[in-house]
Length: 147
Length: 101
Image 1 (spheres, chains in turn yellow, green):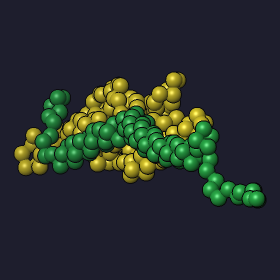
Image 2: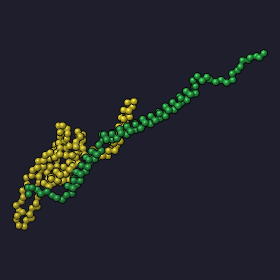
Image 3: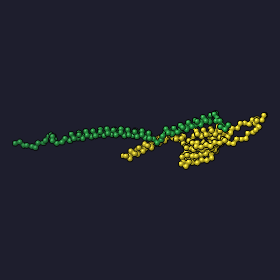
Image 4: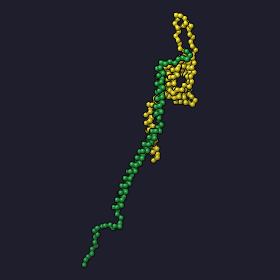
């Protein structure tokens, strides 16, 4: 009698679980797009590159490492562009579709180009104002990572 | 001379001291009827108890459901807010002044 009761309870639990899983399938699939799988991190890297393009900086992923405790992915991105664009890149990374933690940023100005002295001479067109370029090395920790 | 023939008894009545089977049969019938009625009442009572138990079990399992829909929705809302912020940043015309200038 007890076995029958247990079996009935077990079946009811399974039915309930199946129902719950079906009801959240759509949300689950949507949530999965915010996680990078250890077996395929290409979509995540593509997202970083896409963000860089949108913000107008040149970016290159210099290293990708799984953390020792496998709790996340450590990605280093070196980028170059104007200060405004690099700032925009930083903001977009913080608001990326993945859960990212910007754990380090090394920002330095690129050596400026030599400006021609002719700009002061009468009759000569002044050289266009070139915005200085900056280089930034981002250290990102991907938290939404499934090893 | 009168011949005394053996008289045939016409009516067969039981003696009053012997048990009356009809009376006991009625008692048995009544008992069985009561027993059947009691069984129906008991069955209905048990059915109600089981029904209540299964309902409370279902309510409990709903509460303890391993699938936390609210939690997933909360995470999705957070990502949705991020997406909106990203669009705002991309469409923003405000520029940050280069500190080296």
